[in-house]
Image (cartoon, rainbow, N blue to C red; front, top):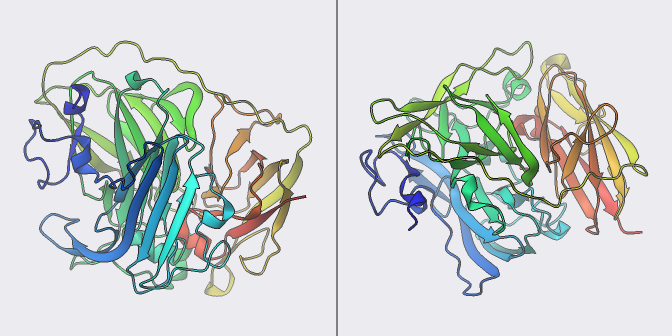
Length: 464
Ligand code: C2O
Ligand code: CU
């Protein structure tokens, strides 16, 4: 164990590493279970994932029936390197059909995990082997693409962290933070989704905030030591606006790995489905722990702002260090050439007439609309227009995009996104470069109530 890894230990409740002093047996492996790699080869990662119900202690002192991956919420952290072959043996131990979607990974279409589009759903008791190469480094995640409001709301999500050995270690010790929330009733059980149109319109938020599946865990830190927070928002609807009093963050990357360069951000916002790569050097001492806050945020009028909540406590031990300047890095990112790109209008539409909620793309709910078309090895500019007064995180499967400014130039620093917040009544232009992976690729709002209410579409990427 390296010296650095001694200090960044996330203590979950009291089951893993009691007390605030850290112990030599506590490493990050203890607080987010890692999937076991069953393949001895260096460039192949083989893991088994089993969806299964399990009672877990989400809130201390009570037991909650969760839908887990291999008994864990979040599911086991899958670690791999860029270029590795990933093989996942999935077994559906739930009593409803399921799939696994690899959010953000440039998989072949047949591995994308969309039921009845890219594969038949995996029936209860049945298995499916996912197998694909990992072309990009970054924090990716996996979740079902079936009954997503219910399944993600009960704990079906996990992360896939693909590292690139050429990234500077001095960016800090990696701490994976899976943010989510959960709606529990008075008996500590998950509230099942109902058909209440108001809840669908707003998007359901849970009444407990979770970091790595626990309420208000403690992160142990050494004052001044740089940490690299790999953050995922796995919540169904909630946006997180992060605040750490007296500190700012350096955003070094997002969904698809490191950005061209870092940007200082005081209060980064992360929408459902997005990832943030943040460098931060928490400072304090043993009598003054810090609190990571989820600050008030509005997802549009007439919705109320969310209430600020404490997400995580940061405790300090040991003597302070001076981490020095953040290292620089290089990437191979280049602006997508849009000179020959076709512009494709995509309006995000909400229809709330007659006490029913229908959401759609260009006014048409999923299933009733035509798919969009594209060709392999071509470029498009997706011109997204949010015609509603609510925010929508737009997610495209299988491909990254670059956000363009009003003049059609990519925003700097360059970075790769697969999910992006589209604020109320806003327009955004997203450049996509299709490679040679044809197939039917979904796009949808990652507020899962909205997706299920119809705000989904597909682009058929065709070979010539
Ligand atoms: Cu994480 Cu189709 O989504
Ligand atoms: Cu939405």
